[in-house]
Image: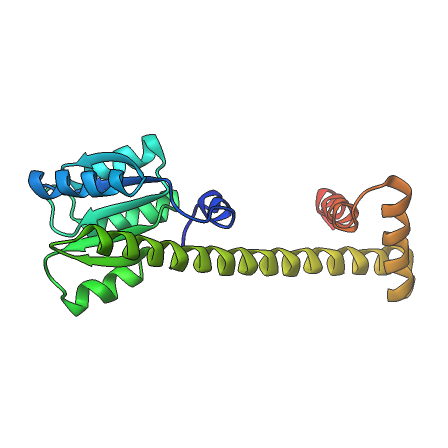
Length: 209
């Protein structure tokens, strides 16, 4: 699963449970029952939305912690909406369906679906499913954060190496001496090593060398 929005993942790492849940189902009775059960469980409920497009619009406006989407809805179905809600906003999704087709499960796993509920849903099933889905989402958020941090460290290392070799060539010094020069410049200016290295690289690019 991937997401273009890391803010929601950052929030997930500090939240032990979701508080605001959006529901979307075009069947009024089911949507009303879901809302009642969620409120009984202590959640703040957004919706119900009558289709996937309304659910997406509400998510953009209200930024719930989690969304429960019926898989078969008019205008935009649950899977399409899930892909947009998670891909654009980083909001995890639980799919609600009367069907347990394996292709739905496989498709959902790729686009931000962290749980599945089969109709009809009892309040206890709802409670357990949301806890499991949120735990899975938190695990994803933690792993995603670690991956981002690793990527940033690798990118910074490349910049520092690039700056070091710029100094080696321009000052005609050995590699260890160039590194010490970068470190000294960082200390003297009370800046991080990566900031100093980036300035060296930017200066080189500005000169066009």
